[in-house]
Length: 204
Ligand SMILES: Nc1nc2c(ncn2[C@@H]2O[C@H](COP(=O)(O)OP(=O)(O)O)[C@@H](O)[C@H]2O)c(=O)[nH]1
Ligand SMILES: Nc1ncnc2c1ncn2[C@@H]1O[C@H](COP(=O)(O)OP(=O)(O)O)[C@@H](O)[C@H]1O
Image 1: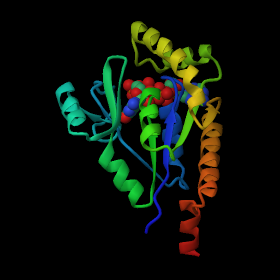
Image 2: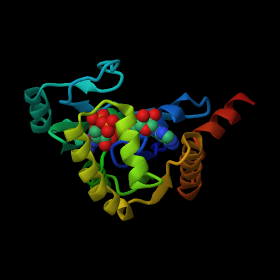
Image 3: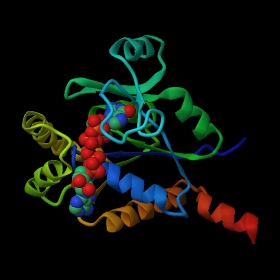
Image 4: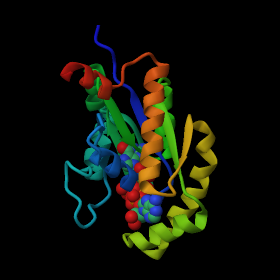
């Protein structure tokens, strides 16, 4: 039977740099994870593309997906729904590829219940002041939304002990390297040959 891929979950408070770190990791040539694109009822931000950044859905559409059990997990976060399509995750893992989810804490808890063998990594800010400054600098949120996100962030940071590893996002590339090292170690721990080395063996 084909060996299943590893489910990698990256969470952390809004503004810590999850999206930035995720995009940096996926820009590396030696990255072999598949990114699971989430569904959301949030409106697209400028430059965001449907089917690339998210699958943008209406509330009715999203609630229908919940009823049809099409989501591995979902959560309501600052007034919008966010969720992970279950079929894509299962099919990709079954095909032997690693799947990478970038989701918030409530969703990660649900994934932990369904996939206890997953690898759960929490991305932490160097400080709360730095976190707020990153959200403000990004310039995508109103003052009210920033305050809501900072309140949420405190609660989320308290939940970091539910994760297998905490990675501090001080420098983007350093955070990427730590995450990749953790994934490689997990492959060894679970007696898998990491995709990067499988490829090497196929080629040489
Ligand atoms: N539970 C869950 N959270 C998600 C999912 N997709 C994204 N999120 C999280 O929802 C939160 C808000 O995302 P977004 O509105 O894109 O803002 P930003 O990531 O803070 O810039 C972030 O913590 C995301 O990681 C998902 O499928 N499920
Ligand atoms: N290591 C870092 N140092 C400084 N700024 C960062 C770092 N990582 C991300 N940022 C900046 O912080 C802001 C929030 O990052 P983003 O990836 O949107 O966070 P999240 O997806 O966690 O909400 C962006 O303006 C981004 O450029």
